Structure formats: structure tokens, C-alpha cells
Image (cartoon, rainbow, N blue to C red):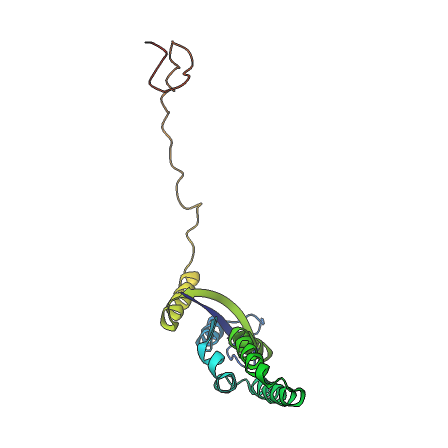
Length: 180
């Protein structure tokens, strides 16, 4: 199972339908939920194999060109110092770092754009994560049943507990009272 981080827009400019009190109305909450972004947290194989391309597909422009610059810089430093054999290993380490941390960069970018983390959901795929999240929103919108409305259960008088055996307390096996 994978984990999905759910982010929704926060600012009132992105969400229309606010009431005068400043609290979001149901319309604003629904529009916020419609603009929710689901980000799968975890390792991405494409980010390990082609980190620059993966970062571009995730629209992480600054990070993509930073990784490209670091890779080129590693190649130049390796050629200058005569350690060109170590460059593929160092490049693999950069790719591994992108594969592990790229999702956090995407979440940070969305936070800078005004999104707020609303939930973390365990699901096998994106469709299941959406179902679980939107069902929990519907479930939260239903009014809760008040416990004061339910009558308290009437407990019948319990029968007295059985007394202990006249042979004294039991030592050893429960069914064996010491008789031979």
C-alpha cells in the first residue's frame, strides 16, 4: 500500500463562496475539496533512472535544473581531478536522493502555492485514495447522534457471585483439590 498526501487550497482568492463571517461555507468547502491534490509519497523508480526528466514532469523547474547542474558539475570535477571512475557512483547517489526526496519537494512547492495538508491516506492506488478521502468528508458532514437522545440501558440486578470452595484456595491444577 502506498501513502497519499492530500493537499487543498487555503486562500480565499482560490476559493470563491466565502460568507461574510470569514468562515468558509459549504460551497467553499466543496470547491476546496474539488481542487484537492493527491500526491503519492514514496520512492519513484523513474526519478532514480531519469531524475531530470522526472522533476520536469512534476513541474519542479528549479530543482530539475539544480540536479542537472550538479550532475554536470560532478562530471567536470571528476574529469579535472582524475576521478572520473567515481562520477557514475556520485551521479547515482544524486539520483537516489531525488527518488527519495522528490515528493517532499513537490509537497513543499504546493505549500508555497497556498495549499494546506489535509490528510494522509493509505491506499493501493489513486482511485482508492480519492474514494477514502471523499467518503470521510461526507461522513464528517453528517450530524452525529447525540448520546443524550439515547436512553441509558437498564442493567438488571446481577446474581451474586459463587462462593469459594469449602476446601480452601486452589493450588496447582484448577480441577485438582489435593485429593489422591
